[in-house]
Length: 330
Image 1: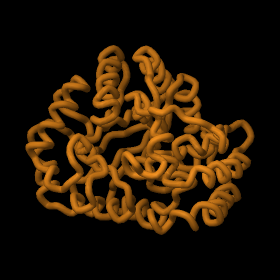
Image 2: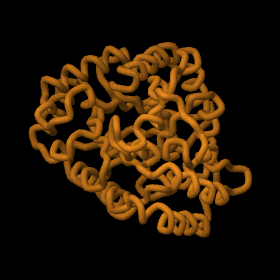
Image 3: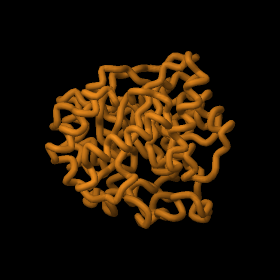
Image 4: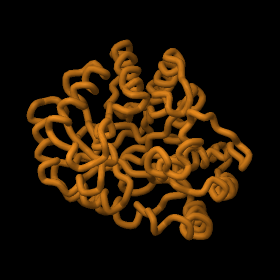
């Protein structure tokens, strides 16, 4: 196994790799993935130094969790922290975020993953008022007391939600969309997380693949790919698909971003390296559907820091092309 930089994941007290493995793709929501192919991807990630998997109970209706559970049972040498999410199995109303439902969802995830205690459970982008509910955090504390979960966290859509959660003493980490096309978390969220000792998990790091530089305005995605059916938030929050950017705008900006990649690095690796070096980031969780993608993602951790000139160019591109369209909405 390759050694990779490890950082402490907030209030969990556990170290995780700076590049983790997102497993939304393995659930089948980006197109079908065979189990053997999924295991090959996870093998490639672990052998490349990844010690952090992120999943959710709704990825493939639990298939992602089940694959991870079976994989880790066969890889006892893999020291991996698994973070899952809960909350999206019910109507998105605050009244559903109660202890009885938490236990039901929690039992399903524990069975899927084959463990008695889940490493980390994140609320999966619930209604905004949930982040302010004392009763919700009391219920999460009860799950810890019952040893169903070791720690809890939140996944958010907005910076305001992140700041509300960071103020809660039991929240271990916050998962938020962060990439060179989504800079707003840099303003307040990351500094607040650092001050509070809360971890930051950066998701959608490649803007649903836009920042790989592989797509054109004529690219066609499969009908079962969220990049086809959720471009305008038809199925879930629009920010989860292409970071909420109009596709044509994103393709044009991605072409400019690709030109910033240093010699020997791909545009995708450049985007991951940019995220890794943002103060306050614990881990970035790109997805992968192939062994090659998993290895390339992990290799971004070994790249030298991007120079200030590149960081300035990313900011200029964002302010010119992305910010006018979506910054205020985020």
